[in-house]
Amino acid sequence: MITRDRKYLGKGGEGAAELLRGAVEEFESGLPRLERLWRYRQGRGDIMARERAEGLNNARIAHGFARYITQVSAGYLLSEPVRYSDERRPQGVRALEALYKRAGAQQADTELVMQQAGFGRGVSLFYEGEGGLCLSALDPRSAFVVYDDTVEHRPLMGVLLSQERDARGRPAGGTVTAYLPGRTLHFRRRGGEMSEAGEAESPFERVPMVEYRNNEEERCDFEEVLGLIDAYDLLCSDRMNDRMQFADALLVLTGVAGIGTTEDIYDFRGGLRRLREDKTLSLPDSDARAEWLVKNPVEKDIDVLRRALAEDIHKFSMTPDFSDERFAGNVSGV
Image (cartoon, rainbow, N blue to C red):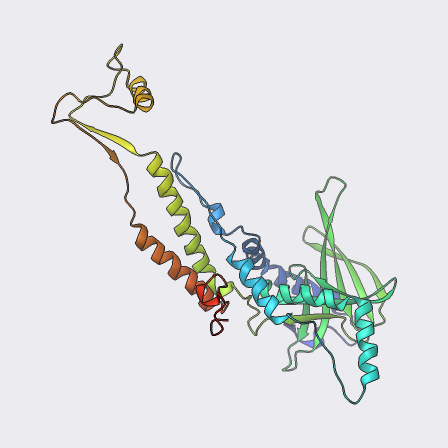
């Protein structure tokens, strides 16, 4: 949560530009975290960036735990549409529902719940469209609300960042829009500079942007288990590396100078090629040996560790594992 003393805004909002500059800098300092959370939801965990020495197998297997947790959590919270009720004013409730339906509130609610679960907060914006009032869910990586520093944390302004691109798709600066009660301020950004670009009246008497926090710390539903997800990805990736290395195992010869061909006893490459084709090897005497140099992983122990990591991920994210046998028609498990 970004907070500022209301006095910096000024009675007429004359301090909005300076306040906005500092708020944008503070917000953008936290963008790497949000981008990492987005990567995990897209199945691109840190394991995808792992590098190993040349010649070593480098399987990089990322699992979709982040997306799974997000979807299960959001689906549980919004399994039924939001309902509104007021026994004293039923007509008002019907009018409100009709207004929200025209504004697209149900679709926005679905997106906001996914944002809360995946980013730790959701951001919505009310605005006037061609058909009247509209409600849109914004990307939390480009929108936030600035609050006052009182115990009530009343909204001072909503901020929307937009990236502009030229005809070839290259970054060409951007815009910053500040939503205040009764008016909207527009700014342009180029490099590290921000300049005023205009002002417009707003029909809203309050800040039309709203933040929905997932919890007090604004942490997403899988953020606590990122380390466990990384460990699970690493274990499965290394397990695949072991399998690939087994296929490329070294042939160790004892008491044999090398494997050549009939034509050239020092043609070791030709001898190995002949070995792969004939699948037979002739040793000079009983003291000579040939064996594969392989790493023998204990599959049972690896599988126990894999299951333990998966169970911890579900346990600490408080997300059920629907593939578990306890959910196979078991009433108590469900």
